Length: 84
Image 1 (cartoon, helix red, strand yellow):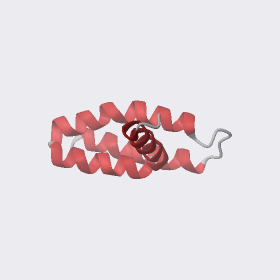
Image 2 (cartoon, one colour):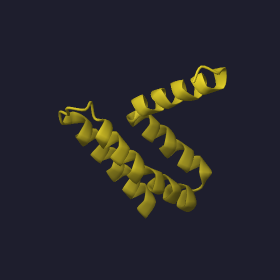
Image 3 (cartoon, one colour):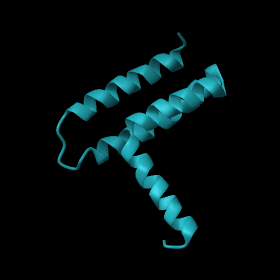
C-alpha cells in the first residue's frame, strides 16, 4: 500500500473518531479542518495512484463529509437557478 493511501486511511479513521465526539457547533469546525487536510491528501493519492483511485477516495471522503457536500450542491443549484 502506498504512502498516500495510508494517509487517506488515517484521515478516514480520524474523521470517524471526530464524528463520535460531541460538538457544540454540529461538527462544522471539524469538517472545515478535515476538508483542508483532505484536499492535499486527495491530490497526493491521485498523483501516486491515478485518477481512478483518486476518484474512489473522493467518493469515500464525500460520504464521510456528506453535509458539506449537500449544502454545496444546494448553493450551486440555487446560484444556477438565479435565486442566489
